[in-house]
Length: 351
Image (cartoon, rainbow, N blue to C red):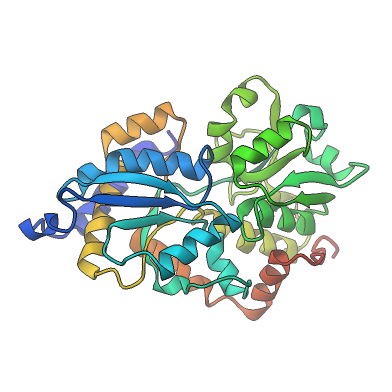
């Protein structure tokens, strides 16, 4: 598992440093209760895989050992779930959500439909910092960046909705690298996108390698699916020889667009949050439980078997990252707003 030993040591130190005493009263809100884990995407995708894995182990680390159940709430790239967590879910610590981190930027750029203020969520952490990548079926013919760039017609890529990584990554790569792309929207999650690609409806899509390698494992092993491009800040060790997007950019504007619009957001793709106004003592308790879960040997063993990477961020670090996004320069905000919209995204490939 990527950087597994370092992660365990780091998180153990974080948990110890941020630990709060286990008073008897901490069990009261959770003993014999149910904790809902709301996943903002459909079953079968990467968010669902991480959510169900965490749910199977989290209860052991919460005082009172509640039962943790997963509830899928797909729609609009997790916007429905985000609005629910902000406006409807009770702030009692018994509803946790995992939404797409790009929803924070959706608020930042003024996307319609946002009914939350991301700065008021209580952030638990992220189980893995993602590596954006593009995967295509071999039958599509898009087996390299050169084949993509030279395609006679725009290459059809699946996406859920504006704001999701499958949408935003494709839009930014199109503008930054000059890749001919046609986005096909409306899929409920990556499970539907994979089925559409296998059926020839689309060529593939761009989302997280951590999800692609897990949910499309058989097709990858059989050579039926290829990954011609990755878009993290540095190459992923499991993708040797696959070009990195920022090394293909020919202008500083293109590199900055990739850095802010893809690389930074990849570190916070899979955040776990609590509703606003959740009592601070319960936030601290659940942050500790979240970190302890991610260092749990049983959890790590199951993650390895499921081919799920663990490379987390703690809640306090994630909280600072979210706050930092709201201090971006106006020019970068404008470019992100352009990427989130349906209008053509101005090219950043020409000097």
